[in-house]
Structure formats: structure tokens, C-alpha cells
Length: 253
Ligand SMILES: Cc1ncc(C[n+]2csc(CCOP(=O)(O)OP(=O)(O)O)c2C)c(N)n1
Ligand code: SF4
Image (tube, rainbow, N blue to C red):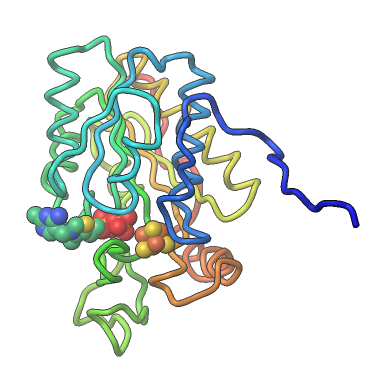
């Protein structure tokens, strides 16, 4: 019988020398985000001057190990502050953060919003998996109404507030030059999200203001869904609440 060896269909991006999918649960969206960012940095040919600042969490803690550029892992929620300092000291570097939704808009909300307000020339990539994956699935500001999490066992109600629409919020801030929301639950969404990340980094390369991309991403383990069901959860439940697209794209602030 012929051997059924698995083959790489598209190869591994040169900037991702580690087998990054080994760090995460099966069906997790974070390796796709890592791959996507590696591809964009390679295509823009900026690897030598790119610095990643990771927050704490599944989305970020593994990032610096997986991606072969300079990187720094900060304390939970402080990535935008650290990226600000790095960019101000070395303005020629391209500095971007990768943060979970908890890291970016719960504990890190103050740093994130004020960096946008100050028009810091950094790029923030926020991975929205609608919960705190790393620590066992507590409710995040992005959790959906009715969503069962370990801290909302009966489902999120108005008592816990409404989901935060972070891409729209960033777009409303004057210092923000670019804001978009993508997803990694299908090849077409992956391709579109790649364009968003590329445009966000180009805003920074053109010395405009703050740029932001939110990426809807699967967390099968904590959602208690199979990887295939998780793809559907994004299209059926998350995208209706968090529409995809560009919310701001300006060339002058
Ligand atoms: C000051 C501080 N508080 C709490 C923690 C514990 N902690 C680590 S990761 C995390 C949640 C991360 O969730 P999120 O940012 O949504 O990322 P995900 O794991 O879902 O990718 C928490 C609460 C910490 N490391 N530091
Ligand atoms: S807990 Fe969720 S976010 Fe973390 S690695 Fe597993 S699937 Fe990914």
C-alpha cells in the first residue's frame, strides 16, 4: 500500500523556523496568526528592523519563540507601553505587539487606548478569541452575550456588561491611522487579514500614527468545541457580533 505521508502544501515561512503549531492546542488560531505575521514581515522585507512585543497569554507568550525576529515579552497588559518606549528610542525600527483580547483591552486597556491617543507610531495586533485562553477560559471584555465561560457558567448577561468592539473603538481615536478586523477561520479570511496586517505595518513604515488589527481566532479547548466546530463558531456567532473589514484608513491625522 502506498505511504500516506503528509506533505506541506505551502511550506513554512522562512521567519518561522520553529514548528510553532506544537506550542498550541489542536485547532488553535494563534499559529495561523503567527504564520500570517511572518509572511507579511517577509513580504515587506523588514525582518532586520522589526521588533515584536508580546503580552502574556497563549497569543503572545509563544510568539517570540516562534518568530525569528527580535522580540520581548512584557508583563500582562503592558505591551503597548513597552512598544512605545522601544519605538521612541529607535524610531527606525518597526515595532508591533501581539496581544490577547484580555491582555489588550482588559488589563492593558489604559496602555492601549493612550498609545492610540498619543498617535504612537506602533502597530497593535489583538487576537480576539472571546475569552482568556491561557488561564482556563474566564470571561474577557470580548466574550459574547450568553457565552458560557468559566466565570459566567450561566452565560454572559448584562450584569457582566456588553462585548467591546475594539476595532471600532480604535477607529474613533484621532491618533489612530488604521483600524481593521480580520479572522483566521477560512483561507479567504486569512488572505484578507494578511492585507490588513500589511497595511497596518505600512502605516507605521510611512511614519503615520497608531495602527491596529483585531483578529478573530479559534480557541477550541476552552470553548469545548472541536476544531471544525470552532471555525463555525467564528462564522456563525463571532462575525455577526464583530463584523470584518477596515474601520479607518487615513494618510493624514
Ligand atoms: C498581572 C497579571 N495578572 C494575571 C496574570 C495571569 N494571566 C496570564 S495570561 C492571562 C490571560 C490571557 O488572556 P488573553 O490576553 O485573552 O490571551 P489568550 O490566552 O486568550 O490568548 C492571565 C490572566 C498575569 N500573568 N499577570
Ligand atoms: S487554550 Fe485556547 S488560545 Fe490557548 S493554545 Fe489552547 S486553543 Fe489556543
